Image 1 (cartoon, rainbow, N blue to C red):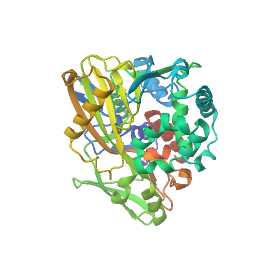
Image 2: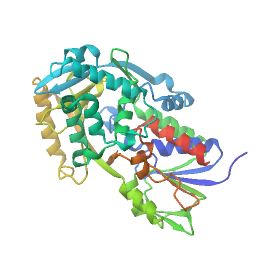
Image 3: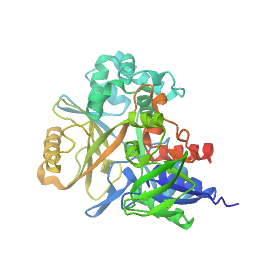
Image 4: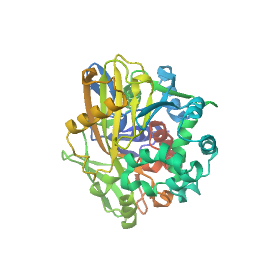
Length: 431
């Protein structure tokens, strides 16, 4: 029996699309409002010369089961390609192989006991499921306890410094553990890594789910940023767009980044506002290089160098073989950082110098094209006790309003599969 209730979904990223996909199965009348001219959020694709590629890097691990189920339902699971990948580590001016038991044993900067502690910590992280205690502990203390101060300094300090800056000291250990677990699940007993990508980029998935939704009479409004949602008498029904259009719905689900909530939703309970506003994010300036040949043999190259304020270089073409080499170089930082608003040319020049330091054979002549993408709210800052900081997905005292973004996946990190998993869970719980 068809459910005639109408639901507005704000945001056409993976979470918003997953909510629409699940709710249309139950017969709801669904409308999606996306501010951008395309669906996908951070998963969206752009034309990079002769390539269609993600604005921000994506890969899939063996634990991304909810995403894989969608690929099967949409008839594109056969386009998922698995490959063994390599990691590298640039430290003290030297490039080391990484990401295997053999490379760890050969690594010269820590002793055998610290190497054993490193392996034990990975194994321990993969076995944890109840994270209540870790939620109360800060990540740095937890990492130092397990790895020792020297290994923490070598393997984690620069990664956290150049992603969270002044916000790093209060990060949740539960969030770090979940990140370790996700990647570790894609490794064998010798720590060799296996990851996957989708042939045709994430656009194949976005096109398939959009077609499915349209065929199910879901209305998709692109280039339709929401200006205001009015809340009166404990009910949110009216949506107004910047172009003046107004809509009314029985229920509203917002999947847009929480920093936008205060400016759009008027009339929310004060305590709910305070919780929403307490969630911090860091932004990213992500450079994508198209180059001649290869830069390295690694898909993921971690960097620990005091002269470089980047956590790593992702050579995507070492996962997904393409016509040209493709590098992603992310600069994460709070958007209050003075560097965030620097011109593209500043980051390109800076990155060119970094790449030449890592690989002396790299030169400007090998660069075919560079694109700089920015996203203000790329990564929620999941602090210790974050579980208690998060508001409820169903807004308190409002009968028909639901709000959530990637921070609500906690302790899991943002990702397509996590978006789908969260939407499934919330639909089952509230609808």
